[in-house]
Amino acid sequence: MSKTIEITVSPTGETSVTTKGFTGSSCRDASKFIEQALGQQTSETLTAEFHQTAVTEQQQQQRS
Image (cartoon, rainbow, N blue to C red; front, side):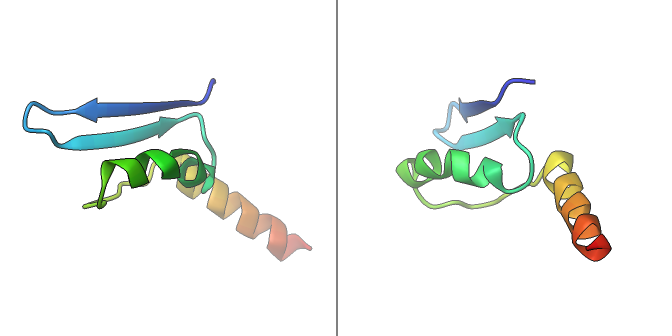
């Protein structure tokens, strides 16, 4: 899956940023400059991809 950042602007001017194809916290790094340009963040919804990677990393650390 290719990595994409989707920006949606509602008719009232509210914006949302959605990342696709990123794993773990890399989505935050990729979209940081856009979020800063848009202004103050009001909410955040993390995807299953974000959480799945975090669990996998924890399991690998426990095995070491």
